[in-house]
Image 1: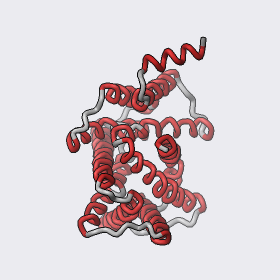
Image 2 (image 1 turned 90 degrees about the vertical axis):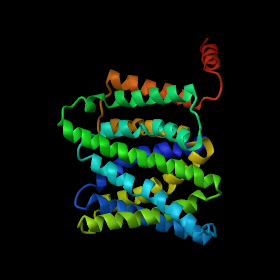
Image 3 (image 1 turned 120 degrees about the vertical axis):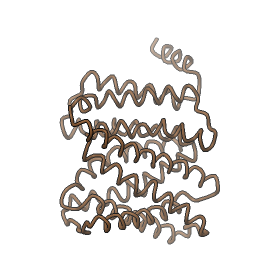
Image 4 (image 1 turned 45 degrees about the vertical axis):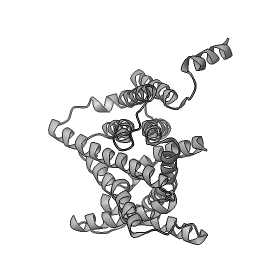
Length: 302
């Protein structure tokens, strides 16, 4: 079950960059994110209500859902989308992969979950691998103050994401339904985004282009309803530290698709990055002894 949840999270979120790219244009970014989570919350809430699985919540529990909406479904997206105005997407991916480290630190800070040396090593290898994957992007010169601003915004978005992970883990331990919490969290997040859009003086326009509408619904249903549910279930089942390693694998999926549709050319540095990510993944998730795993592979190849 964990493998299926993990694979679904990586594959869906690894492909959302295509949909996000199609969202850019005549519609303001904040308005597009608002539409995304409004649709996602309505679909999820309607489905849960129809099946009788929408969990009843107290005022205090709604406050917890509101906080989740702030951390995972609104403020973090504003930070990330704002960051892309100042830094290349490769650098954003590297910073977002730092969620693995932030989850380790926050897991220890809030729950005293001390990360194992293997987990720390695996995360370090994975982040280094992502750094190698986007080395060409990162080597492009840009104005330092804009780069620092963009990095700060991306880091703030990643920190919000990490805090949201911690909150979701706590909610699940308290018996909250992930699906119900997501439904309300996305609804509150959409409200936050609507407020932000109005304060910015941005009009709520929408494009009728098939590419825009198709990408919007892909981001709302698979990208939000399904992927966020899979990811947060994973947080509850294997812990925020391991679940966050999926952020390291998103770029691999994205670059794999880019290879087919945009003729992305792999360099030796990028291939070395893939190798580091794979090794890091083994260290994070393999439960047995690494030496035993190597000896088994040698036996098979002998």
